[in-house]
Length: 153
Image 1 (cartoon, rainbow, N blue to C red):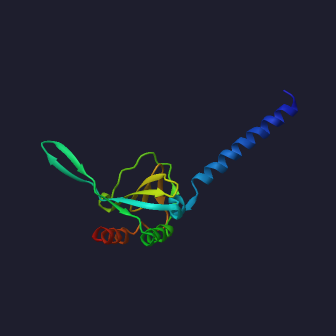
Image 2 (tube, one colour; image 1 turned 45 degrees about the vertical axis):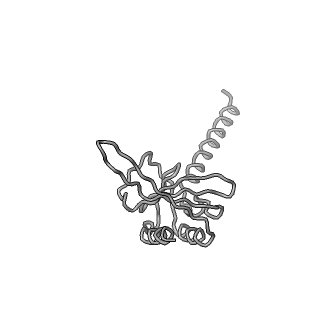
Image 3 (cartoon, rainbow, N blue to C red; image 1 turned 180 degrees about the vertical axis):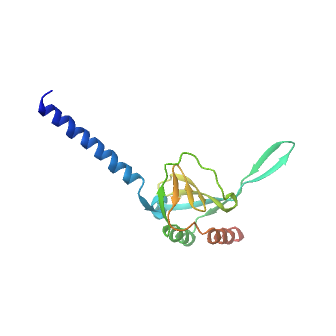
């Protein structure tokens, strides 16, 4: 091989490795939870109460109760709440909750009609990716009180 071909090969490999490293750091950088949720483009939010299991002769029936949030004031409260958290994508493949009683299931419906489900669990946010909350665990009590207010109205 000539020196010119070796130089092109070396530069090509260097460029490929640089792109891979930059992409890796970009993907696993610290991000604002509100930005990841694209909370400013949310039109409607569904939240689901923790499923309740009823056993009857080894048959499990899961009852899921959902509530809808459509008023702008409540969506803005949620937006401000989520924007206070920083998250980082995890390389973790699977996830098992250690705090199932402190878990919230939401589905966000966006202005363009798309929707995305999310599970919020103390210091983990799960969607198509698993994110770890970097600053403080998610304030379960605040979310719980907001959801209770919505259910009572």
